[in-house]
Image 1 (cartoon, rainbow, N blue to C red):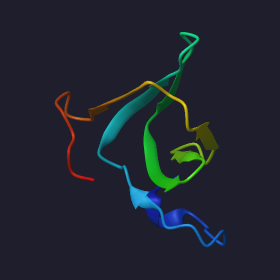
Image 2 (tube, rainbow, N blue to C red; image 1 turned 60 degrees about the vertical axis):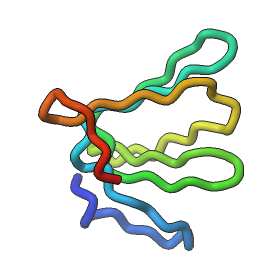
Image 3 (tube, rainbow, N blue to C red; image 1 turned 180 degrees about the horizontal axis):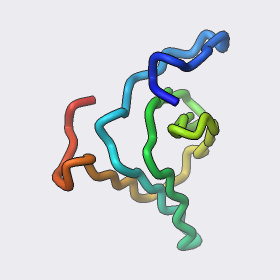
Image 4 (cartoon, rainbow, N blue to C red; image 1 turned 135 degrees about the vertical axis):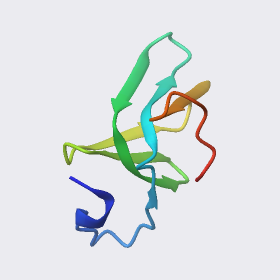
Length: 80
């Protein structure tokens, strides 16, 4: 799935993450949740909605203590 293929009827604004290889969220209990090949992000007051290239929508509630990501070329991606 590509960013352009997302069917969004939620009213949320999504930004493209198509240049990211992965992103991970770390929570206070030490758990780390990762999305490989994220393509879209929407930020709300309650958390982040991240859509993967598999078409899966992941919700990461506010409360994470670390957010990491890497660009597909192996370097940093600050193109959001």
